[in-house]
Amino acid sequence: MRYPEAISFAPGRPYDGFFDVEEVIDRIRLYLEHLAGRGRSPEQVANLIYQYGPTAGLIRDLIADSLRVDEGIDVPPEAVVVTVGSQEAMLLTLRALVRGPDDVVLAVSPCYVGITGAARLLDVTLVPVEEGENGIDGVHLEAAIAAQRACGRAVRAVYLVPDHSNPSGATVPLRTRHELIAVAERQDVLLLEDSPYRLVSPGPVIATLKSLDRVRRVIHLGSFSKTLFPGARVGYVVADQLVVDDEGRTSLLADELTKIKSMVTVNTSSLSQAAVGGALLASAGRISALNVESAAHYAGALRETLDRLDEELPPSHRARLGVRWNEPAGGFFLVVQVPFAADNAALTRSAEDFGVIWTPMSYFYPEAGGERALRLSISYLSADEIKQGVHRLAQFIESEAGRTARGAGHHPGRS
Ligand SMILES: Cc1ncc(COP(=O)(O)O)c(C=O)c1O
Image 1: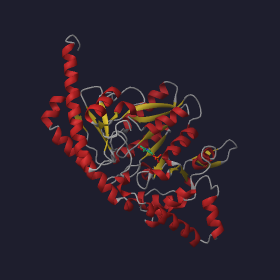
Image 2: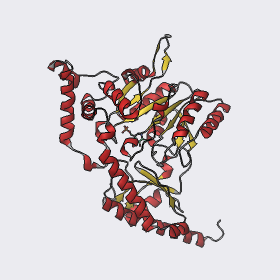
Image 3: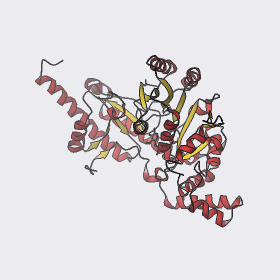
Image 4: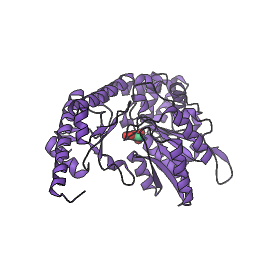
């Protein structure tokens, strides 16, 4: 906001060219008609919207149906808890899983700030596990779990974004997904799968961890923020694990999460659930079908960004500067490695002198890391803005690289 003229590659917001207020109203009406069609009286329908609602959610059946047709995830509605965005799902899940000071959660790093923030809020120790080009693999995961055990800690869960991760854009291949589930079973840990970008990315999609999970080792965190709209603040968690409560009764982990949610947000907004429920009804559960156009838009924006980078910083030029970037197959983000400290001071120079904004990758490392890298988000900009933005970014990178080289020249003794 301090630099209104700057082009910003920072926010991971959805593109707002697809927003349509009338459509939201139509979808709410469709959901209400659906309730009436299932025998609810006008008073009951009014109560569902106006009153406090069931803590686990109104639309768990529609979400369970949608997961079955769209994602091959076959769970009963009782295993689904509707949450205030997947952010609440993270909070509830961490709260339920971590019981004592020796319990820790691993997070594939660099990682989304929402999980880091939720862990910090709950005093949960989050241990980063460095990802490779293709996320994390079974060997590294098993080694990280063993290292924690050796320190007397119990790994309760592993957080990862398997598809087009935020912030790195990395995607975990199918074979590795099978491996990760096998490790989770062998090592008695749970995988927290958070995958908000898969259905807004160009196909083919790789099966979710949850759809491959035959041993109830995966908790799936869902979000409608990118596929529908973030203002709804509707997400969900699929937790079909069996747990035994303090009185020895067996129930689903989803029930535990519901109890915690009752003390956090009571219930997710009924009106928002109606808007999401209407979208699920309108598409017969196929959220993917609703997102064909937006997925194509984001794919185009990503391609445009990569092409413009290549044009502004052609291979020999970028090799000389020491600049490179990855080429994600989808999602909102890519990472540019640069030959200088991409810190807040550099970001200020970038905004003030070049009119372009990005996010320092160091923000996404729970411990140290990412000091010479920046994240670009492609989701919010038009093609013209991307063209102009990448041009400005290239000029900024050249300037910083020169500045760093000159700085080194002034201090010949420094290595
Ligand atoms: C990896 C990841 N998870 C979750 C979310 C947010 O989800 P929600 O809006 O449903 O809380 C984001 C949004 O940026 C994200 O990048």
